[in-house]
Image (cartoon, rainbow, N blue to C red; front, top):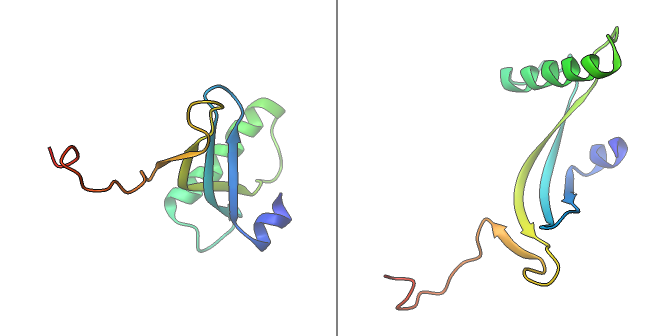
Length: 100
């Protein structure tokens, strides 16, 4: 995954439950020592490393973190939605009903 995201940060995150959703994202890999990371991104790196240390014990180094910026959301629930884009919503044709 790391090498794939380095080459192309476009990715999908899929939740295989009912209802089923697919998130199309742009992934941002953030190194703990990245001088270009924003304060928010540095906080996310710190937080994810704290959570990792809580479950796996203290580490001597901090690890790279990924932030997934969601671009689109699809409802892939079998039967009823079948891959309908929900965010952003599909454009709606102007009709008398939509103008009310």
